[in-house]
Length: 226
Image 1 (cartoon, rainbow, N blue to C red):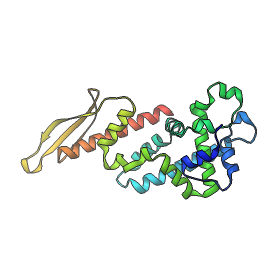
Image 2 (image 1 turned 90 degrees about the vertical axis):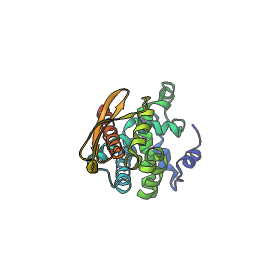
Image 3 (image 1 turned 30 degrees about the vertical axis):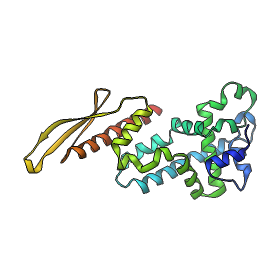
Image 4 (image 1 turned 45 degrees about the vertical axis):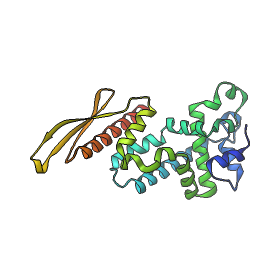
């Protein structure tokens, strides 16, 4: 196991009470004083902080859109990816059998430990400290609030993360008089229509179609996790 000082540098927070961090990094296989209770609290801390970030930074997102985006940001796959990115597994205390069985790269163990660490930050430094750490670790997913300000870019990034091809946009229909044209645009993913939208310009229709497609994919992803 690596020194926890390195982990504190990675997450940008130094614990005043290092015992909290040690508990957060203790798997149940290692003893009775483990991270299960902290993991329970961390789940709530993460959801609250992400909810507040979305509320404050994405004013154009509707309630349903925020719910789906939050689900994607706090799901186990996301936690696991972030935990692996900061090499959290090498800091976790676990028994030899658990470690030998791949425990240091286990999705459930790593995601639970990350939530426990967030709870530890919250207990040690308060909600603002937890907010800061979450903003740092989730920066790649939250940067620019792309789902709201650049839905086409957000959709492309999401598809790339899933190994899917770049989306294409096609004009399905133009209607209305010259001074009041309406454009219906569809977004195609791997040749299949994912969503369509209508607006007063092709650009606006493309943006709305991308937003709808991204929301549908996030909703489907959250549903698969349930």
